[in-house]
Image 1: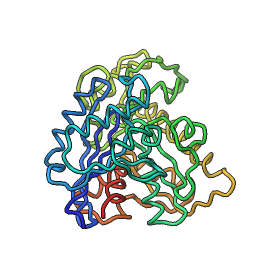
Image 2 (image 1 turned 45 degrees about the vertical axis):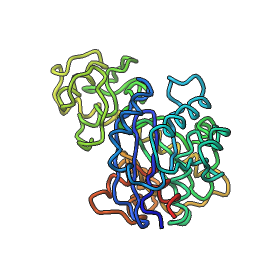
Image 3 (image 1 turned 180 degrees about the vertical axis):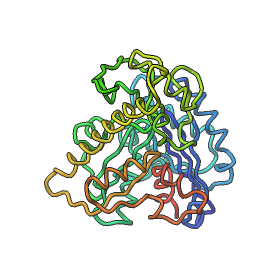
Image 4 (image 1 turned 90 degrees about the vertical axis):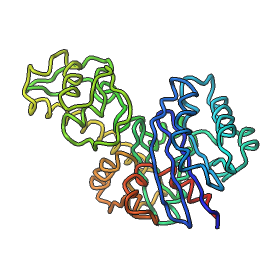
Length: 336
């Protein structure tokens, strides 16, 4: 048995790290990594994660970072991220290549398309081992994966955007006008400014449904993250100031925006379930938006379980194991 296996999910906004010892998840962290600012952000995130990584035997890697706009192509993004990891991690690197399994960095760099955005397959593969006929709904900060775990269809983001398996909307970072372009306000429909005044993190802070520790990035205006400051950003999208209406009135508008986002997830799930031959008996909820995923499970009238319930994980890390499911999954899949 390996002393410790690390799972890394290298994203464009976060580095997610899971540590597995004796088949048990002993630590999980999410570290802000705004890769659109440069590869030095990955260096900083890896340095922050070093206490978890330093003595590990194996480091299993999956990624979505190659989509970040600093890379000319997705293929070159994969190669550059792999090179960065090789130069900064001393443990044996095993790169996850989806249906092709794990490979050494040199082999993985020769087939970057198989490496690109394969993290959903790691989670689906682990879930399929644990639960029969499961539908994975993993809502992250930016995107949501909806996967029939025993029968994934799309293997790339482009394919999954067609199949409903990838809904490009997330729990915190998604701008409000990409969810809805109008909302009810004080008994009338109000058109929204199609600018990134507020994010879905702001919407959820206005309503009071955002956990305190999941939004790790700067706000759109660089100001704070109080309910009042979120409301001011949200109201600006209506062309108004926050004090023009009572909080309860704004909360109804925000609830409508949240509901529109949930409907898009429900639509994606129904598209996935409509595929002939798909058999689903339960929903597995994951991501920082696991609570929203559970709501979709209820709408589908399917029993729903949090990802953390499928694995052996230290009690203090249960919620973050669910939130960082791909990092946990790739670590468990690689652990020998």
